[in-house]
Length: 68
Image (cartoon, rainbow, N blue to C red; front, side):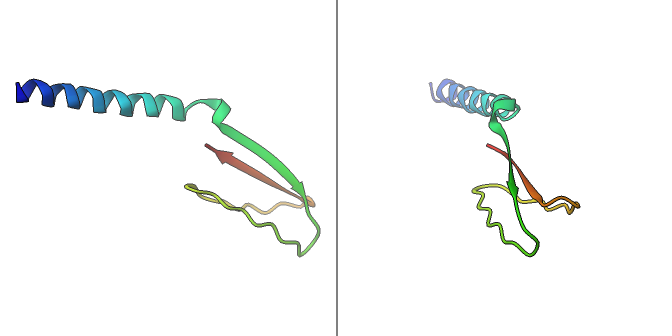
């Protein structure tokens, strides 16, 4: 009986992981927003959990892309 319950628990845990991975590829979770900025301006970005990547360019604009 304990082996059957353990097997069912493992199958359930694996199903949850697989479903979570499937949802992470959902394009509706990806958001892009741009902000007009001035030279020497300041933009604060908070992500939880997540990461911020900065790439310079010649426009007076900041583009933020976030997933989640």
